[in-house]
Amino acid sequence: MAVYTHVEPDDLAALVARYDIGTVLSCKGIAEGVENSNFLLETTGGRFILTLYEKRVREGDLPFFVDLLSHLANEGCPVPAMLRDRDGTAIQKISGRAACIIQFLSGISLTQPSPNQCEAAGAALGAMHRALEGYAGARENSMGHRHWRQVAEATGNLDVVRPGLQAIVDDELAWLDAHWPTDLPAHVIHADLFPDNVLMLGDRVTGLIDFYFAASDFRAYDLVITHASWAFSADGTICDPARARALMRGYAREVALTDAEITALPLLARGAALRFLLTRAHDWVHTPADALVTRKDPSPFLARLQRYSAADAANLFVAA
Image (cartoon, rainbow, N blue to C red; front, side, top):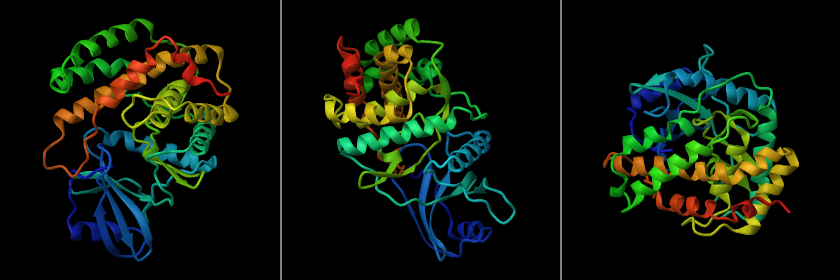
């Protein structure tokens, strides 16, 4: 979440008037994240999130996201609805951007999750995967394995981000191209279930949010993305064994991985670490200086990549 595009008060009032949610009281930009322009919208009818979709979210993909969230909500998953106006329209236009008004969910995004909270997050991820096994929708993963070279090339010389990074990335891309699997269980996944995309009250998950990377890919790849973001220290140098085991234990309550998936976890985790290293490096170089957004240092995902590349990396995914 971030703010790249600003909204004029009169335009906002006209947009809100299309809904049965009252009139505008306030609208404040949300600085976290890097993808879209997001605002906390308060009206006489309650609190909502106003999202304006920026460069990485194609307007043509928005009907997929609306349908996906509707499916997950119908399956009992704690996801926010994209509200429809009186004409039944969820996708709007404001300030030259496609936009949606989204249900506000209670809860707190964590920065230092406990093992119990990691277990709850793992279980929520597994329950979401079960709900998606029969989902008919599909979307190419624009940030999946086959696109990583393009991201690296679009960034430019990666040594500008960190000396020696270009050679590390080139070697890793070549290794992953040679070893990436092709036949693991797959369906639509979240693909970005970091702690800031999970809302919790105590040890209970109250919301899974920010589905704009959701796409068709390996379910085990979704699990290792969550592992990489929930089980490590902020600098990426230490994988907390208690948090890692709890996450895997929670997931295993909902989904039984195949033997092939279990074998592939360290490999997939290397891919997940590289994916976020690359996109953070790209944003580090290309984020506009005047954007109300917090850039994220790519270095912690280089540290994760190095840990997942170690000979004992399989031990990081044990649930017991």
